Image (cartoon, rainbow, N blue to C red; front, side, top):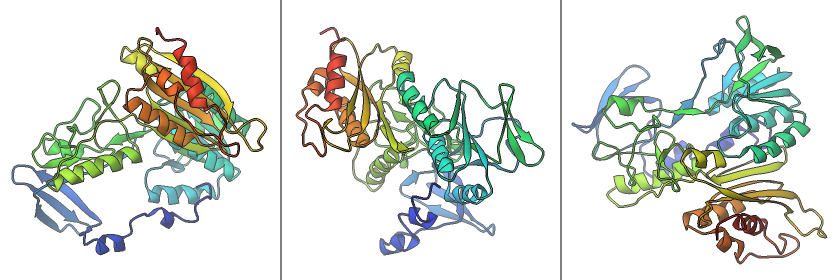
Length: 399
């Protein structure tokens, strides 16, 4: 959307020719209408209405998720879009050519990435978020404030703590109404998250979890024998709290898919759970997070301490270093790391991966503060910001 990738065709990692080469029978434009777990069959229907019953030994559901459309008055008007598929993307890209002003409803990763894309095309953009801050699912309010400030510097208006009351216009959207203010717009993007597509599973009697996604065991098996599920349609287990959660990320999907595939083919593999590690790059800076936020920890009854530091990605004397702010969360009793958030100019992804591994291995902030990190002026300072933030968090523990 922003123009970094030449065409939508570049996004197709596995074209039909790949499946043919791998001797996989790819059937497109066919709907599965019904699953019969007792007979171990699926009923399919082609575009012309022709139906066929296919038997299976093992079945994997990877039905994904669909865009969540909130019940906003006027949501069905022309000029209102969701972004989930390549077709959605092409529709929005076409509309952007005639757009002067856009409103993005939702300040999650997709909403902010699209705000960046609109700004790159010189479209005046407003982001409206019902929750108190941007990226509230992964960032604490202090870190989210940094993100909001950086985005607003680029000319994008952000409204938090307010919802869209109505989409204005007759048959075509002309703007939105937010807390009594009319905000004009030619294009409105609803980026309010996704909802698991579990209808097929529920109709087959497959168990649905408390998150309204398909419930699975560590082998990605469902409540029905020989039926597995993976990706955005399933409920995951949080590695820290052990509670059910949704982790609708590409990284989660591919790891779950591998486990489901191994087990469906007669092997043995398990999925350990999720930390929902995520990263993005918008407006020239990066944002990443893993594990719990203070809010999510509090909801599960966990107390937290934190360490936060602003540093440079290179030594002060070396040109090209960028600001980076790191926040480490830990539980106060033993100092076990339970979360990390980073906002900065570069190298955020691998630092988030480092914190993620520390959480998975039960590392304490004192151990992370002593990590044997590397140094060379062109790429890193002698003091790793993650280690420094961990040491500050350690000073607040009861050790």
